[in-house]
Length: 240
Image 1 (cartoon, rainbow, N blue to C red):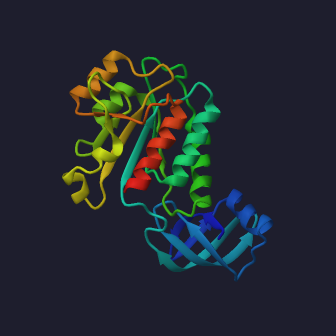
Image 2: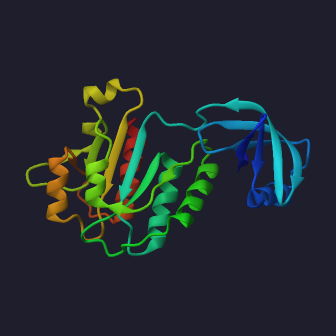
Image 3: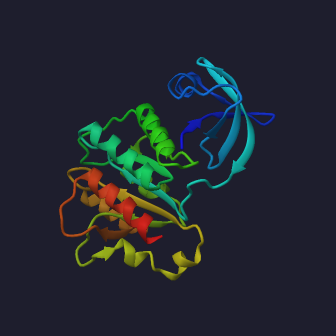
């Protein structure tokens, strides 16, 4: 199944930009009158009839809408510190999208080695992964902010988890997902915070405790930042 990305123009039409049009008409060789599948990133899959098939821009008429295409029964926000090697962060973003995530938030910690991250390339990777993994909703890629800002601004009613083991505490994500209040919510909201290579500072960890973040462990192995983020995303996907 080949999926293209377009924007709704009103009147039951969707338009593909130049890049998507080239892929549709030159690479996949679709012609006017043929049926194609299009998403606009909001969650639905549109079955369309291709009207204009030029490489500089293509338009299609919506014939059928499938809401919630490829959706998952939770809202997951992955706040992950950028890795020193940017390729590793891009790998995480791609795999998290394939598995199931609603937003990716680059957060800069006190001990972060990489303090700048360009999000435009990350957005293109996430869009490509959305289409490849047969999903209708494209995850948001937010602009970077500090760990402390994210700790303070995360949704109040979300289950907020920080991958940092405080003394005497060793919760696991599957155990916390069994909380009655979370199970009762048909579409629970979850925030997971993953630190940089040098881990969170003591000040960040204390702030997280103050704002109700729960400490979780991902096992005994010492995981790289991007590995920990993918493992955490997978746990949510398999448990919910």
